[in-house]
Length: 329
Ligand SMILES: NC(=O)c1ccc[n+]([C@@H]2O[C@H](COP(=O)([O-])OP(=O)(O)OC[C@H]3O[C@@H](n4cnc5c(N)ncnc54)[C@H](O)[C@@H]3O)[C@@H](O)[C@H]2O)c1
Ligand SMILES: O=C(O)C[C@H](O)C(=O)O
Image (cartoon, rainbow, N blue to C red; front, side, top):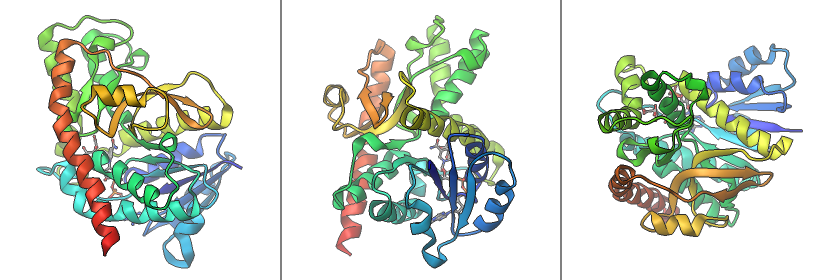
């Protein structure tokens, strides 16, 4: 059995993400958990003639426990989205609590699962989940991922609009974190190779860093990216399933991870100011992360990294402190 659980499955991301995961024939069980509406979403998806058996859970009757128990992959898009004028960090107060609660249940009922965090602010919510798992002695850094795939998707789209390439053929590694200046697109590493001039690099970098704001502004109070995020979340979840269920070799993709217990982590940590969490290309294997790749940066990208480090430091510390304080209550 290959069970995938989506926590926050009734939301703007949760519903289309669950739809896309229902298309993956490796998935035999799809468990949808939310505080509202999952019976309806599950009934609807369950009529699609793909293998996954869909079940919906609410908090009543140990719904969260049932949703995560036995899950191979758990994807978390639960939590509030931004409105215009807000930063992702403005979501911390509400979403930190939500994510901590979900992580507590995962630690107890699904400690072996691959955990994919979408809820913002990702730069802090991933440390929150890690701290909860550490406190309970079940943290495996190879299995916890902050999903930054939307930045990679945007980077392909925005760069192709300038270079004229087919966007689906373009790969741009995006490293750092998932918020404003912590998002560092490596345009020097774009494939197929393309030489942007400096003004183009500066403009594209800014657009990729603040791509989320474009959607928040256009939605005008109705939330943030949901459909493109569902695409990105499914793409990342499918990569994890391919590596860990089908045994597909050679999958490399950026993700925001804890720098520990896999090849390359210490070397990378030394080049990013000692940060405990960072997004870079990870090489996936049957047990999750095999290796994280080192950075090769242009002079401009090095400047971007220096701007990102203090921001990331603050966001990571905020997540860690939150769990420490909460556990004293
Ligand atoms: N990582 C990324 O690139 C990325 C991209 C887009 C959005 N996001 C983030 O994803 C999150 C969700 O965005 P959305 O647009 O789907 O929001 P949404 O409000 O449409 O959906 C969120 C869902 O979470 C549910 N929820 C709330 N508390 C819960 C709990 N304790 N347990 C389970 N479910 C709970 C809500 O009922 C709702 O259905 C936001 O934090 C947003 O900022 C991240
Ligand atoms: O911008 C947001 O708040 C949502 C998400 O992080 C995004 O990048 O679209």
